[in-house]
Amino acid sequence: MTIIKNICCIGAGYVGGPTCAVIAYKCPDIKVTIVDVNPTRIAAWNSNKLPIYEPGLDKVVFERRNKNLFFSTNVDEAIQQADLIFVSVNTPTKKSGIGAGRAADLAYVESATRRIAQVAKSSKIVVEKSTVPCRTAQSMRTILEANATKEIHFDILSNPEFLAEGTAIQDLLTPDRVLIGALQTPEGMKAQQALADIYMHWVPKDKVITTNLWSSELSKLAANAMLAQRISSVNALSAICEATGADVDEVAYACGRDSRLGSKFLKASVGFGGSCFQKDILNLVYLSEELNLPEVASYWHQVVVMNEYQKKRFVRNIIRTLFNTITNKKIAVFGFAFKKDTGDTRESAAITLIKDFIQEQAHVAIYDPKVDDEQILMDLSDSGGVVDTRPQVEKHVQICRSAYEAAQDADCVVIVTEWDEFRDDRLDYGKIYAGMHKPAFLFDGRLLVNESKLRKMGFKVNIIGKTELAGTA
Ligand code: UDX
Ligand code: ADP
View (tube, rainbow, N blue to C red):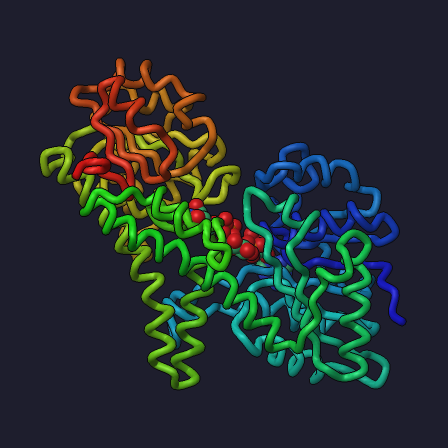
């Protein structure tokens, strides 16, 4: 029986940071060291202002930091001391070369694996935590085994993380399941049990699922693809609702009451964002193409196509409603993060929308409670090419300290992120209306506000998946 006493996590990001902080919190007998090549990030983890915003994270980190939880840039030392190493580095979509725009860029996983192979002085269990294409574990094994000796042995596990941002700590404390894949050899299964024992400090045994390596890797991609598919399905229905007078909330509720469907992940929106959904589906598409399964590839690809369509449809609707032009008009954007309760902006629908508004020469006033000004400017200036669009962005964008400031003298308000503070029982929409140009338009991309309440105030309200036709014969 292998007992883990010392854990190293390579990568102090949105996945590695919270996951290993919770392990330290729940397993005071285990020393956990989270390392990263980025010294600014590590300094922030060691400061009072953590580098990521996540409800409940501060408490967990502050309680265990410098007791059995450490943040460091000394990657080699942490590797050497560890019995078990989580690889939690980033795996973005490749920007160039073979598979560009679809395949995952595994350069960071490979470099972390090579580092382990190079500096390890004793046997290790190496755990693939980052979401990766199927069979990545095999590549990691090849690299590690090529460097193994009689004395040093490596076991590879796949332990994908299912936490969602904004609820990460809750998801980690009470997960639906923990998935651990291993080679079905005696050593592989021993390593699998050692990792399962860590989780079983707080996760009930029946929630720890053990599978073979490839099932584990594919399950993570599959879960994300199916979740994203539900959103694209309800978003496709939202377009039909707007054209017919059906109400997408009512349709989602009626469908979700079927216990076979379930009610979660049926909220129509301006489009899903986040670092995982699009990347993982594109990964699945690439894998299917590689396996010569073009019909399977195009089936999953449609989920991303529908998401792009939803964002473009929302923008077109805004322009059409504002009398076919938004040139020189002021658009107040409420929210920039890809969902509420996070400061993360990766693949946020706000980026696509605002870039389109700028193209149309509108003035955009943005307010988000958690996203830094510089992050907003960087995201909007990232043209993916050589052109420097920053001056153009700065000319058209104003970053505000409150929703009221953003909406002052605006022609329309666009709700992009469903932050609670934008709800109509929290924000004084009467005050917002009073400060706006008339007619004052409001576009709700999150089904957040009560349309009849806001219509009574005087707003021209436009909600995704709803129309004024609703309720008419
Ligand atoms: C997702 C998965 O949920 C998680 O299991 C995995 O580990 C990582 O990817 P995350 O991207 O952090 O997590 O957040 P999630 O809550 O899934 O939301 C993703 C996007 O879908 C957000 O933009 C959200 O606003 C949107 N969404 C979600 C909807 O538009 N409608 C819904 O009903 C649910
Ligand atoms: P995720 O959302 O998957 O956690 P992030 O980008 O938030 O992704 O975090 C990944 C972290 O991994 C980054 O902070 C990055 O600096 C770090 N990283 C990448 N490669 C290495 C490496 N070889 N060694 C240590 N840290 C690494």
